[in-house]
Length: 490
Image (tube, rainbow, N blue to C red; front, side, top):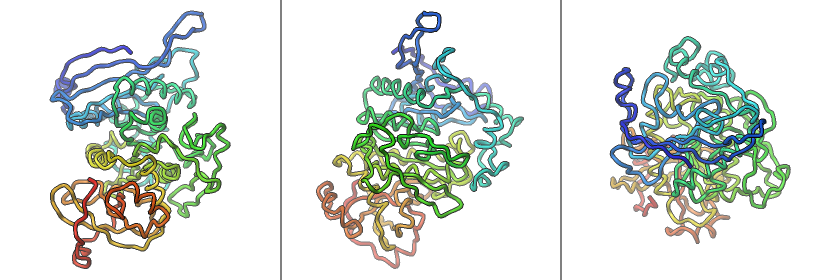
């Protein structure tokens, strides 16, 4: 590992001079992790497969216990998380201002992580492709939700200064997904070992394969994962093709399953119809034999975020379904469900990016408290799978806000037809905040799991689950007097 440290007020002076927005003051250092000496075609040694990491520490001091590791997507670099193309404040600055230490990587063979000729084939993205998929999808209408895109600042096409700034930042990338994933997994594990304490992995798009791989080899060093529209869906592409890929479900290289998978053909597949023109069909594991479990990922809570107008909107539900079926405690946050509309795949550099960052921060800080409880291994994954399978009547349950308001709030859990949304994050609170919500779920809805849960939680005979508040109705207060408050896990 090679480290360089610089003390500065990051971006603030330069940003003021240029007219761009100010950024959070921070101490900056950088290092390289992973890699090894190899022989080149001339028979001489070069260093290969290393990864650049930039560390930003709030000048006022770190106040949050878990640092964030930012992982960019295909053809991108860590600059995604700094300033936005229109000069606005980036997510790194936002999370610094909230007291988080931030680690920003350039994936292997990208940006400041060197590639040398002969070490694989490189590819690039055209400006037209980025217009179609990222910045101006409504002009092309290639998927059902594309017309809903409104949050890019500008026209989103060549000649738009913000588009030109963004496209100028894109870089070449390695064509081999297996080589890319293998090298980033190795270098990323070295980074987690260097940090030495649990982190939050915040990833985007193609970078979304990396948290699965890192949590698989370092589950005790990953506190939880926030994955913005991760590469998917399982086993095959969608929207633009249906080519087979990601033979291990979420990745192209092995993950740790139980029972173990010696050959990916051992993963027996099953197709679920979406029964909707808005959503893609879904390939997950078959129910028989029993779905293999991702035993290391099952230790790590996961949030998958999907925007309203992205090409991920038709299929991210399937990625979440696959995770839950494999015993992973995955939640699905669809921004439209909490009243945030018009975003596309590059949500973190769009006009309302800080609004979305605030939603994620709330989830990190509230979910972090809940998931820090000492549940037995597999418990959280069992919760996700049980809820996905539960067929229950529409019913109102109490939520006890442990934040000090002592106010009973209500939400509706509907039948299994909406089961994939049950694990979503809520969008209702006392005001404009977005918070995760907990309910107490009676055992009657989960009879086959009652004994297991009964041994693992303290408030018998009930268990805690997050629920979506999109069905919230104030009239429930009048129709359903609040029951006696129940002690919350939060």
